[in-house]
Length: 406
Image (cartoon, rainbow, N blue to C red):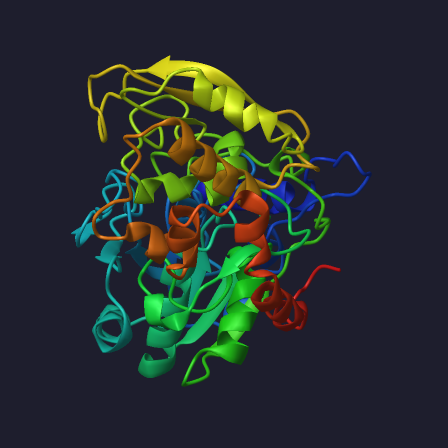
């Protein structure tokens, strides 16, 4: 039996026999269902895949490698987002245009491309269908969902079909939380008005983007999962965790990220350059008073430990700083966005060196100037989080129309 034939049979068996879940079901990812159905959803023709290292099967093989060996699909191109297809670039970087050594396939760079320039990339690639398969982490400012949006828009302009292969939201899809983007603050960390913690899968987001935001509708297809419940965290999936970006090493990182990424908008370290990015926060001059003040808030599901660390890169590189480590002890009760706001409020109170980044990056992350101006005016967490409840309720009503898993 040939190597490619053995791999084909192994892939089909893998798709048919996923691991049992704690609640008694079996999770099939979008790719597993696509492969088990002989790639029928792709409709034949030449296929290009927008993906990164997270596009893996449950036995940790990359879907590009699997599809390349499978005679049932004509895979002819790969499109790499921020950090690249194989994941060699750090934050704010990409791999550029090259030929993949493992498969010989041309890899095109999509990072920071949108509209007509990205449509030109799809046209030049010669593909008929663009497939998207990337693991998201559930936060508006995580750029892969805007790669999704930009690629959908470009596919519509280029006249290409667009198919999204769904994966679990690793921090559940229970509900949306946090402020909704105001469109005048739109950037690549937030193109359109969705909540800071959107509580959706990428296929659900694709449906929302197509239904609410795209000027030109795209020929959209989605391959849904089976066996996923909205209350499931990543460890219920039976899938391997592959870091979606270099500073998203574990599902624990994803759990806190939609709140503590707001510290990118301050002069404090958000833990880049440590083994616990976004779980460790700090700066020179901070001591145990911050952890004590945060614990006094009585926030549900979380405790804070006085911590000291020396980042190996990014802010405070090579210098020892003081701050907190976040310890989530009840994931179901934990509210990452509210926790992030409380940490901003308490950091400003206990440390007189606190400052926002001069470019007001916090406004881009939170989607308006409201968080910054309210905290500067002395508002507490209840007042700040209360200020966005009406817009959040409107987003939740829109979001509900596009949910695939009830």
